Image (cartoon, rainbow, N blue to C red; front, side, top):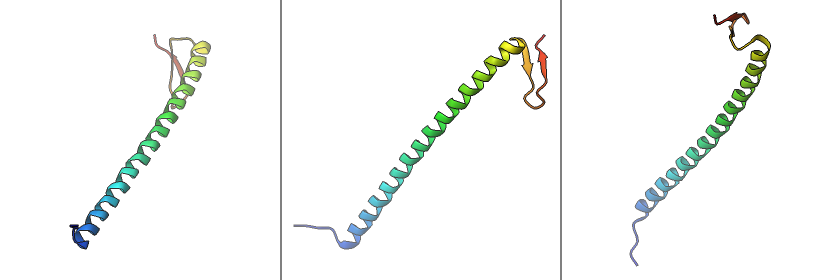
Length: 75
């Protein structure tokens, strides 16, 4: 039976190990990305809930300055 020499085998095994580590790292990053996307969706939903309440309270033509809290009319 033919075999490659030990140096070649170790080099290939090292590259395979590195490839697997990188692949797993990408998978972990994708999971983290999905978690953050879900967090963004939750924040957006909370924002929309508060925005709806403010529209009911101050009217649809109200413009809120998020820095000062001041409310003005669009018109």
